Image (cartoon, rainbow, N blue to C red; front, top):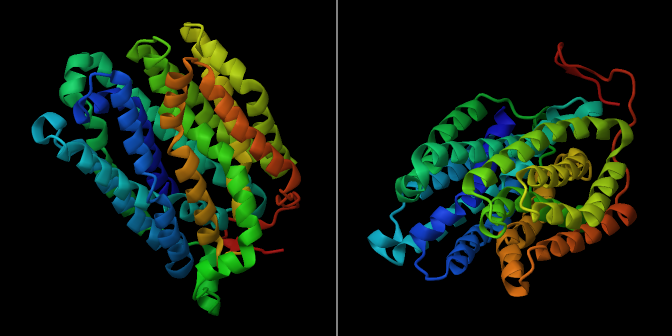
Length: 426
């Protein structure tokens, strides 16, 4: 819970922003072209990712210097506070051009804080976990992220149903953002009660904490960081496509009603959320590499058929298509977090993960809604985004086959006694 609460807020915000993009467009941008306003809204979302690499450079190594727990406490304040701020911003009708400027600032602060969330949370969970269950435990980070998206989409669906489009456009869109503040307060309290990971405490006790984790990461882990960049391409584009682009794609380009789009998203992502930890447990048994290869190969082969099913106009087929993509993400993500953490020793782990993760997420994840919307507009084909996903999945597949070494430990007899609080290190 302590590791996941900040991750929940981060993905809750991502999901809510994508789901409410049409309402944000009408409140923060004035344009006679709804597509242009929507593109501007997605551009603001992408701008929010500009500071993620800087946040990763600051908070990733900070977790290696002062600890995962204290860094995560700082991060949850930034992410929840900036998300709340978006809910109280004045609209274009009130303050004119200042409205989108303030929206950009709030998104950038949120991105800066989020840059330190994933790496520190994964490192904390990884280092607290039994050696042979690290795939299962760390995969909950992605599972919690999808649960947050379900909560966001479910809340949006409920608000649209109860309030209607008129009230939703006037003031109802603010409610999901305002809820980030109480979530952040709870998250801060939980994280302040948490003990740091055993491996970091051991580094502190033995004087093994790195004085310059960033320099050390580049000096000793640059190859592994480069490989992670290639592998993370698929995670970046698949995650943000599923939770941020596809809901508005269903309602905007494919002609589904808002309630149908929200319902489709809720069902598909909800099942995906609980499939990720299952696949994480599988990765503890069969290894990380087979899961990464299978997931990326699945995207290469099945993305176009999934988009084709969505374009048929049937809610049932749209759910099936999104669920297909979601399960492929589950296969891939089930192994990914543990594989990332296993590439680096604890003294540089958080920073070495944060740098490639945030670079790739910023360049490809944050721009997915904009690029995909532009591709549909430029080509006139509703299936054009599928080829973009397939291209990046092919790159990831190449890295997974040629550059990833198996890092999952062999399953051994019991190596930990968690009830007694004793960890036996092979």
